[in-house]
Image 1 (cartoon, rainbow, N blue to C red):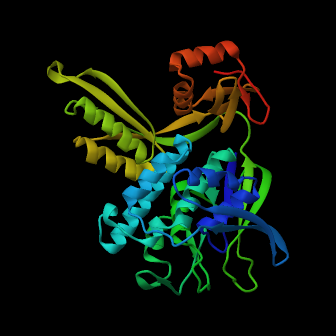
Image 2 (image 1 turned 90 degrees about the vertical axis):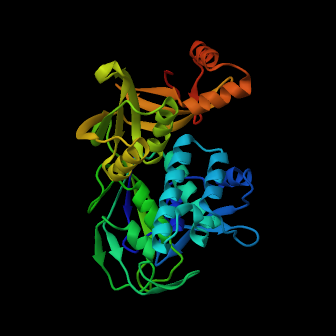
Image 3 (image 1 turned 180 degrees about the vertical axis):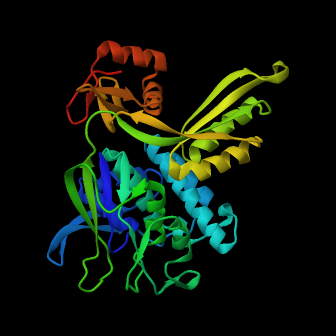
Length: 395
């Protein structure tokens, strides 16, 4: 499934999350996930009619004052959350990106930033919630309309700032915008961050078979204009899809094993789709290896920078390539040993399930089995069923 965002009146984290709830994401399931890490928050998605149109408004409440947290504390919370590795990695990249941008705006290193925008409960829930809801809805790609430009001023903890706010303006760099007469904050820093992290491309309209439409209401009153974010859920079609990716390579003969392992993690956090290390020999018969990295166009700059910074290689070869991918979706398998997070793959009219490694590892720990034993038992049992009752062969 694909998602097209139509945002004539801008975008905030609350509007995006409300729109995803309007498409069917049950946000109440997020409450116990946050409660388990000490964050008490209630999420109520309410159907509301504005300007004669029905959509969803999100009401988020929490007890007491919002704490101000540094980035390391946020990352520790994300590490403890019981979400998939995909959601955790996306949320981690997003908060690091926000801290980097805010640090550049205020002239501070990211880890030293102590400010409301990163520490607030609503920002934390908005970012994690959007990654989580996209996974729950099985959305694999996001495109967006061109973005409205706006003016005016906004009051913040740093005083009165011109619009777009400095962090928002930096996050909008490289994205298509058009002028409007609005003197309101249409795109918030969190909204700009979600656009920066999630949108693959910008265009005038959606492409594919339209499956569902959702509307997320914003809290601002824009007069005669309905302040709503429209989300269009699309089936991109069955069968393999072709996309463009970048392949970066370098011969590595100067790093220790620990440093190579660290490089894997750094590259994935920077946005790499895949990382591969092939051992071999170089000149003078020195042990070495080929480090190969794949990434999307929107992550090329950050992945390349991380590659140079954390390897100190003298050169990187790069090329653009085609990648053929099968339609897939995140799903939950029910087995006699417990539930498993998995990928559902559609191939030749059949659906195949591939359990996620982290979920297998967690189930192995809970059942006292090894990974090899668990996989063998599941294959012999062949009892894997999707949580909604549908089933298919298990890989």
